[in-house]
Image (cartoon, rainbow, N blue to C red; front, side, top):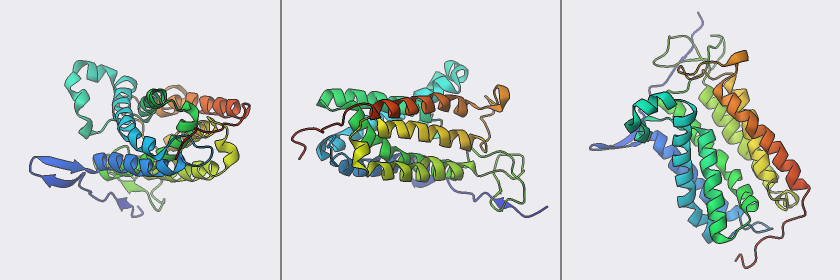
Length: 275
């Protein structure tokens, strides 16, 4: 048997402060949101302006609540509703992992709607700039999944140079699917969105970048699910599809529809007094 990589035994806790601990998982969310907000403060000022830098700063609290509450609620409802129904206190143990991107996305959409209504902003124009920043958090999150040694991949040919044996498995080499997701849902999707966002002709059509994100993420997730081991409590659905792939199909359709709709409408002029 050819030698394969062994999973490096990372400590999921970065720093201990007595009974308190800072976990890589939590740090990934914090870093993604904070760095995303810093980029958002620049993006919203690109013509046509979607908001002010101060408004982008204010959105920090809103998006944090949307990500955490939506992500956890989505995981509870989409993945393990029976378990959490009988163990309701476990719902609040977010430090143990268990966040759904699709639930988090719905939470952020709700936060965007409430925020733009509160400050009188164009919902789609502001959402466009926000979605360009989202892959930053996705990439950090997948790296945290890798550090935690969770959400590993399916069986891989031992001759694959990066095939890896993860702890808590059957000792058979697997795909490091968390890294695949970090590179596609994170880095690649960010580069595509940022490149598109630099074109004023696309920024002038609110909804196009958000639609591109939805379609792009859906495609990346479906691809990565081909290498990721499905959750043991769900397994495979008919025709070998996974829950992640099922939830991604509506995202792709919605993204294509939103991009088409956006390009058919007249250019957006931006907000006044955005200095």
